[in-house]
Length: 194
Image 1 (spheres, rainbow, N blue to C red):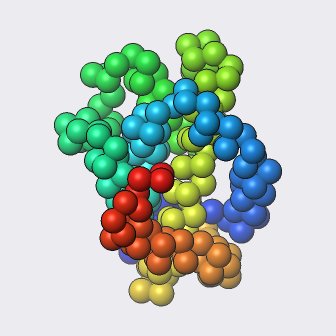
Image 2 (tube, rainbow, N blue to C red):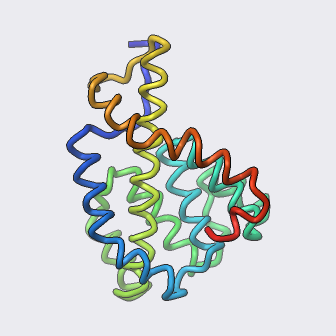
């Protein structure tokens, strides 16, 4: 289909599976945010790296804005958006490369790549980094599914998807992507808590 939507999106079953895993993993997410292994600046670089691979326009827009507000310079953002991570410090480049690989492979990284990632950072820090990658992966696919539903209404349906599944995810996720995200960037200091 030449006019179809081509980004990766959720099926209803996978959406609810991943949502329940994130809810169940909420304590680990909170722990990761307090561990300080991953600074807010580094986290935003990871988020931009994942968003660039998966192409969620909402996530890319928001996390580029947040990255700039957290001190990531425009040159680094341009490199992330071009998937050029070779000039980043090694302690970031390894995670950024893993985030890209993890997203490109649909969360099925090559075993040797994953092992190197865990060896480099150690179990605890690698787990925290992976938690952030997972959160962003979920957000991107949810955002892409919201966009897919909107594109379906314009006559550009996603291949191998169905209207009912997209509608369910749209109803659950669109308040965040279509209402909350724009408000976040307009409210003074709203991005500081992220």
